[in-house]
Length: 385
Image (cartoon, rainbow, N blue to C red; front, side, top):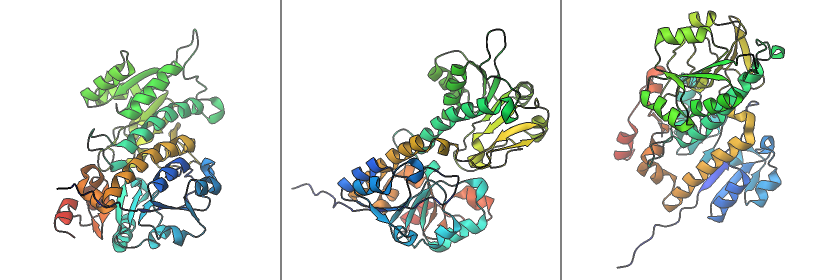
């Protein structure tokens, strides 16, 4: 008997231009487009989609992409890739059974947003919840966390300067002058790269997380003894009241990040201190945090400078776009054996990212938050819905 190979499935992929002024990244860079088109897939890129990352339409055309001059042409694609959540206008252009892979920023969506996606009967996947079956890792979260951790410390160092309203403290200190004190909440990938960067600049770093094994892993990864602690409210409060910088780096596997620092504690922190809440993507872990934009990234509350930009990685759009593009490309190449829908069915980690499926809300947290009925995706798939 001869082995029967599955028929090659040609994908139709669309890359819209991000209309949000604060989003500078693009989902696929030209070298990834070249890889996909070489495998026989069709890629349509909206004119100007890569201009903020310094990729021209000519670059995409040379890589084998079709350049579309209308958004409607891009939204004819079977698979849409976006690095910003779809806007309400973009949802209107979608059609049933279309697959949309994009982030989902919890602080910026509401019940009407979810209902509109349901009415369009699209299959929407949240990038940050896509999991790798082999390692259990969230690949896009991981690479964006690396960027966010480094960027958070560099931004905090800048905001501490007198000209930016800070205390005028040099993060690393100098001979005879003690360094700034940095508190990091969370011991995941963001914390690891924030710790590496802060230590490299000479700051005093203290890390808090309720998962002792994460604290142990972070110490092993950094390769030195660190001041670590579980989130003991009394000890954490003592440290925050004398901190110069506080970094919120707690990630929730599903749903909202828990608030671990109350407004009362923020109010008692040293004036001119800096809070960088990277967890704002999932609601934030400081009670005083409110989402900001790259145009107006900071606000001051109780004398404390807050930096709460949801897509902090967009500050370095070139690096971030390359990282996202590499992950999405490898994912799409897996789909060529049978198509994107069979891949979702067979790939447990990919199913974990689905939050609306053909008119049904499949994310239990979103259902609870917006008082909408949610249905198990596994149940819908097994019933051939």
